[in-house]
Length: 239
Ligand code: UDP
Image (cartoon, rainbow, N blue to C red; front, side, top):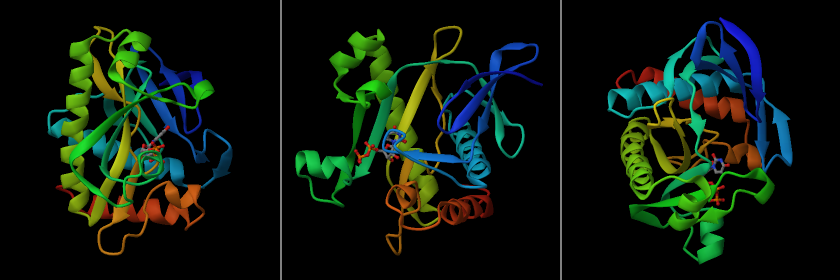
């Protein structure tokens, strides 16, 4: 089914599909990178866990009516998706203040946003993914005002569903990053991945970090933590 390797990124490989022009196979790799690729390590089994978690989340969001590029998981490390043209905006949603936000704006670490914050970053490694406002995003990417509103509304909606899902497995969704892409017909759908690589997850009871920060800050074994998240999701079939 898999034919040519089209692209290899930091965490995934993208393959074309024999006989299916509008579809791609995403292969999740065991590589972990942080700080714009400056820190790099291979964690055996990470690709499988991120594929399983991301597939589970896309499936769950589909049931909630969120359109995405996801078609189905094909194996432990691969998923079939619709080909999209990624819009170079990283949409970050924040429920709890941490990281750069506390440093940049002086907001207290751990402050809870009852109205989640939605931020836009320009997805451009060479510029270190700078924060941008709506006007910058429209100018740079050519998306319309209405499309940008749609993306932000989708991000808030996804946040709501993910918060409910994570609450059921004893985890707080602190913040996360989404990417959107355009299908062949021009419509915009959720794309890329949603996994502990792209979210901050804090254990409800203990505050333990259960996401890529364990690698960024050398806290614990990443695979053990991701496996805990996956086992809790799997055990919660209705999550
Ligand atoms: N994030 C991501 N990929 C990126 C940038 C951010 O997945 O290229 C996620 C990150 O894991 C976190 C959220 O988006 O869950 C906010 O990340 P950011 O880098 O903005 O962190 P901060 O600025 O808070 O340190």
